[in-house]
Image (cartoon, rainbow, N blue to C red; front, top):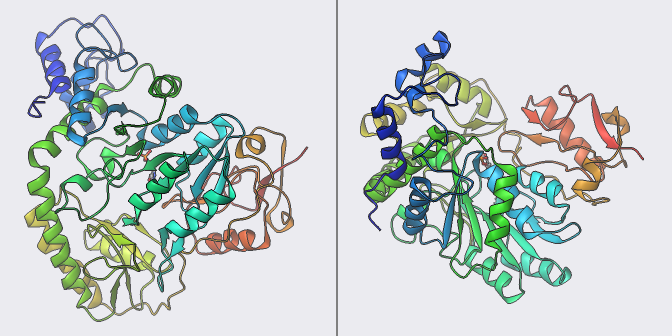
Amino acid sequence: MDQSRLPLVKALEQYIGENALRQHMPGHKGGLGAPQPAQDLLGVKLWQADVTEIAGLDDLQEPEGCIAEAQSLLADLYGAAASFFLINGSSVGIAALLLACLQPGDEILVPRNAHRAVLSGLILSGAKPIFVQVRQDEPSSMPLGLDAADFLQAVKKHPQAKAAFFVSPTYQGVTGDLAALIRICRTHGLLALVDEAHGVHFPWLPDGSLPTALLCGADACVQSAHKLAGSLTQSSWLHVGQDSALDVGRLKSALQWLQSSSPSYLLMASLDAARWQLAQEGKKRLRQLWEQAEQLRRRWQALAGVDIVGGVAGTLAAPFQMDITKITLAVRGWSGHAAAAQLRRQGIAVEWADETRLLLLLSLADVEQDWERLGQGLPQLLQLPAPGYFSKETMALPPVPPQRMTPREAALTDYRSVLLQEAQGLIAGEAITPYPPGIPLVLPGEELTAEVLAWITACKRQGQHMSGMADTTLETIRVVWK
Ligand SMILES: Cc1ncc(COP(=O)(O)O)c(C=O)c1O
């Protein structure tokens, strides 16, 4: 297909050019009724492009025109059997996939480092997750991912499972032997669904650097174009693999159930343009980015007191490896939070920090003039007196607690709030998740063990931002009560 085409962007441009009297939604009518502070912030063009499904602009739910063409171009670019635009991030794609593939009580194998987005799919479908613990890096304790032998053992223990869910790469950019994991799925008749939220750019990395879900034979995957490509926040896409055993009709229905009937054309046009950008410039930009990332890692790794997870080349214990454009590091004498705050004072805002480490993302947006400024960031910080922090590793995951009910049963039944210190042995009625990275410590339906409660208390003490619970002070927790 002609990847230089921009069907959705052009259709929008054409409509704006008509200068029609907009006797249709949205009510701001091309910005005429937009509140002034919002116009000042966002500019005229944004309001003009914020339109809805009128003649010529197609319909996301039943696409036949410019959206259908934009999605076909996307599928063609990635080699997918079909691709779908998502206007509520990869989160909605993950929920739709589980809803399309699973019925209440069906088992799905899920790595314990799965993002909390999987919980919506579990609650909606009523499926029973079989959590498999993931390997962790030594000594950083960073979650790596599923080991194929551990996964095979879990598959054999649960022969009735219908599907497996994989996270590749992780939030910190770690990939494992995805091809081996998917081969196991094929041999045992499991659908392979991949959360590739952080891997939208992988096909353009220098040859075969990191595995991609579609080339490894996944039935479907989701990718957050907004995370590491050029589209607007909240815009993602979902691909169905060639030879996928997934019921695409059911997937379409699930997407219709979950997505808005008034999808944002700003988000969709940005997806169309992000696909165009990757097709036109992805190879060049990503190759440059990879080289720059290597140089930056080398420069920082050479600094006394800086420890980059995976070193210069992103090397981890086999079969795990890293996307080197994500830099997770620790600075001796500095907590991750303190180092992040200092970098912010120096004009560098990071993606994430915890007690020990911080994470910086590089992407195709980073241009040459930024590299020197970024490269100086850590040397400048190191000239300051260190606050004197001694590392306490915090990226580890607690052991998987026993599951007493499915997430759906636990989330939709009666509950009570009890004091955290009195919750041991009760069943969680809500998920508790340090955010980011968004990996739940406990999910609804799981027993609140002493270990999990100690983990929650530690996260609270460290001032980690937590989400998912009704009581944001975490004095109390919701438990199942019936
Ligand atoms: C591993 C992983 N999966 C899924 C998601 C959800 O993606 P989105 O923000 O596009 O909904 C995230 C979000 O951070 C994530 O880190």
